[in-house]
Image (cartoon, one colour):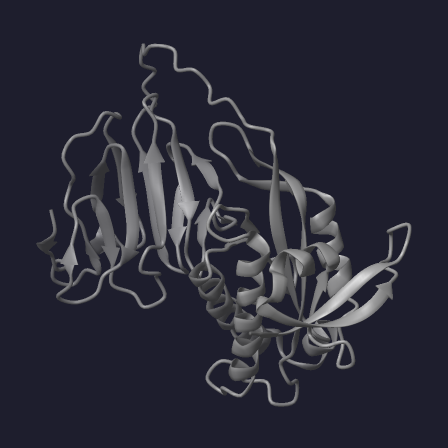
Length: 333
């Protein structure tokens, strides 16, 4: 239940102990400052986030009054055997014993290890691992079936020159804000961002009954391209006037195999298929002459007449045995 909760005088932490859960009792101990030697008891999970003055809060959430802490920074989960795992969801990072965690995957944290939130908030995990006699739980059977998807790859044009000619501490915030806006647009168009490889964004749409994946991906690509043009003129986002923002895109459709990998606590999504490889290679062919959004023949065929395309003819894609038809996505009709 939400409740009004403010930090104690002189402190920047606020916490209400949740009701007892199934997992054993554990403690997260603040060690950042002598006046913050506080112990936060949790059971099944503990969420760490930013405390907003006067906002309603929830038991089991450790609030930190610090603008560098994300609204939902990270979450610690505990299984029935007392093993704890941390999932980072922050902008400024979460560390275990000084090692920065990759956003998304779960990483085990053991008793005695130090959890660092942002730059200065340190906590030590305490409590013994309790081996419980529980009934054997069957492992989830992984499904290895081929799924039709439309893959989108978007890449910042001339990124190497951008990094070479501009300070890294200026480039990184601009790229972060750019990808945050693009991720929201992908989600608004019912897509999923898989990852950010280098200076690119990789997203996908799975086939469904109501509308095929290619049509949804084409709508998203047009919206993403328009958003990039808008953000390029927004000095609050793109603060690099000497390096104009441009992005090129590619859409490919085909069968892929998708599986979570990493055991019971998955650390990522594996996606294997020709469509993924082709999207990265096709994007490299986009320029001012072709247009910024290139699509393969399969995507063009599935998208139907609801979109306008420019036929670029047979094009040789590096690594593929023969030329194939490539199209530029121009507009939605």
